[in-house]
Length: 495
Image (cartoon, rainbow, N blue to C red; front, side):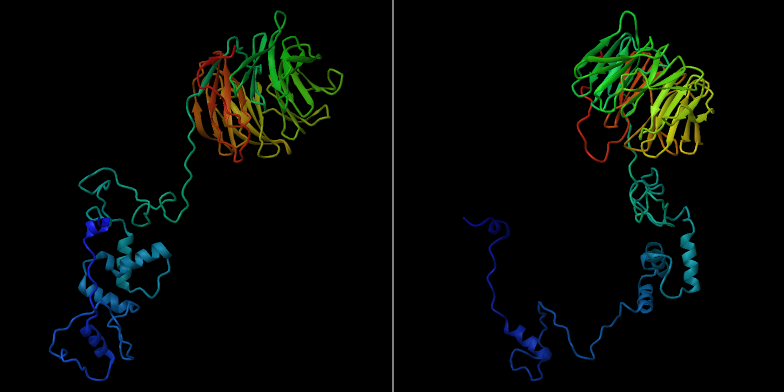
């Protein structure tokens, strides 16, 4: 059986012996002696060889020079005057646009005139380039095509379309719908409470009426931590930084510390005369704010119920946040005041009075030292930024609705805010431009509660409509970490 190539291409040709004529013809080009072959004569037909051997005689030269631009240009113009790509002015234009404004050699006045005509906008009757599709002047019609290789003045030369510019990063897409919804019966519709918090161990704590429930984001299991019925209700929950302890503020003014792993109450601390609506954990210090207008500083290593009392607000304290370095404490109240405390001093370092409504929304920037954001209630509707190192206000943005919560992304310089009257929205902002990246809707009542997942990508929002909604809004961190994804995409109930 013959090989496959023989069937396709035929049998290989037989090798032919070298032709003496070919050898003699090569010799006759260089040898000084006459040709001795009887087959050679001046009148015989010339047979061309399959090789080209150039003459190396000193007098040998080419009939043209590619380096002589003027001579080559004049010859080309004589032979093809209608070809636009051989026009010297056109070549100089391309050279100046692609390689820079400097052109080698002087330009004659007529070439300058042609160059100016080419730089002028193209006339409607003639296009410099024509495309088969997408050209407004082509028979196919349609909008003008935008070529990725456009350079001015032929077309629009923008940063996105220029071949010399770096490619523009694609804008991140943010889903406009929650990927998970939890039913949360008895979730209070109270602006001054803080009933949702997400731990560093990826466990969500929610206060529902008299009970506190724990929802694991990795396994979607629900655990009932405690029940304060029938004499008390839950007003605030707050995780410690390591996620091992949960503090529960009650309507009676008490603060309970729970060991989550053992589901055990460790201690109950007193000191407030009214409900505890907000709390903030430091490294080992827990601060609680109450309707009695006081802030109590509690050292969980000490046996005392509290070690210091911060007095300054003239109405209920509804917002508390420690700075990332635990050196400053920001507090907001229903008296429209925002205070900055530097412990152990019992007097506030700064008093900001620009808000015209209750200040519950407070967030410290994890990217810039001493940068604080705060939001006002229904009569204020503004997000304000402060430099807490100098006490200087930085910026103010009118959001158009009540600001209920603010949180900063730890993976990007972005902010998420939740709103109440009257939009009930969740808005993602780009800082410092404060441009809106996305506006999320879905809650039917004001969005009073907000927490961020430990990986910084997911947020959970709670509202008086008794639902918890999970949104993927922030980018992922550059470095990989432990698995903190939210399991199960279906709608379930938290109890």
